[in-house]
Image (cartoon, rainbow, N blue to C red; front, top):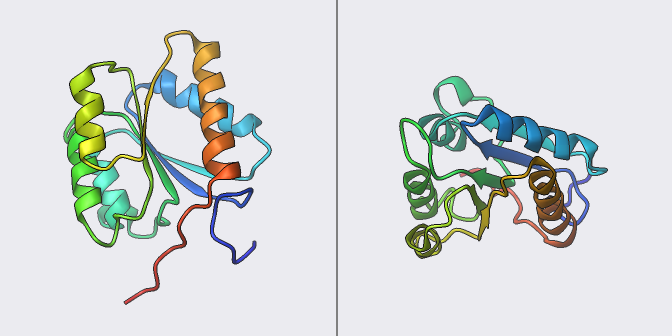
Length: 154
């Protein structure tokens, strides 16, 4: 593997925070069909997302994600709370977080950007449109964008 930061065609560890099994399956399918060798990690609630990001409890050995796909409507800890905690933690702040949710509520869009999300995507209802959205996301974020390198250990 290259020492270059992920993005722009380099492999990336992506954290998908999603409680809907159908959306997880569609996202995994879209990533599997992609040509870039990315590792998709899935957690099903906000508490697990924070544990993964902080590499604690069951996720001590988990990699630092290059990018997070975050649903807002999650059990245990809301997606908005995950976003807020990640973006206020200096050790996590540089990880791009893209909101991927079914909510089209203007207040969710505004609050997401106020909490420093990097993008806000609304999930299409049609499964084919959902897969197409994930492919466009991957094409942009993992082919064109240069993601930040992992910070040096203190």
